[in-house]
Amino acid sequence: MGGNFLFAFSALGYRNRSQREAVMSNEWIIEVLSDLRSFSRQNGLDTLAADLDRSLETARREISVKDAPERPAAPQPDVLRFPGSEPH
Image (cartoon, rainbow, N blue to C red; front, top):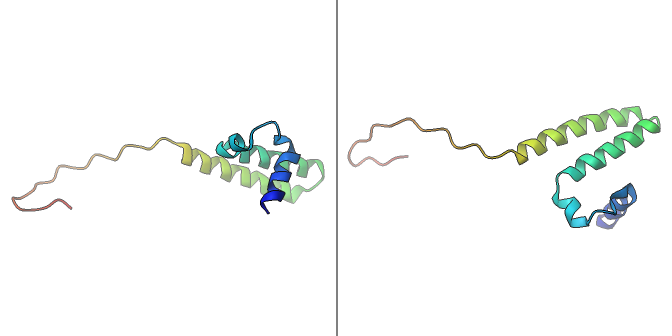
């Protein structure tokens, strides 16, 4: 399957990027889904195009969450500690 994927990846016009650069960037999946959606629309594959719209929304949402900087942990309230008690 890997060879077929790379062939399709190259056939879609991503040959000018290095394979590593394309795979390392999260944007390549958005580009591929967008190209597939355009192809579907141009060829009357309306249901597939609608599914790809939803897939693009999902990909963008998941990538934005994945790429978002980590938030610092919420401050913990002060806790009264008794001698000999261990924090949990």
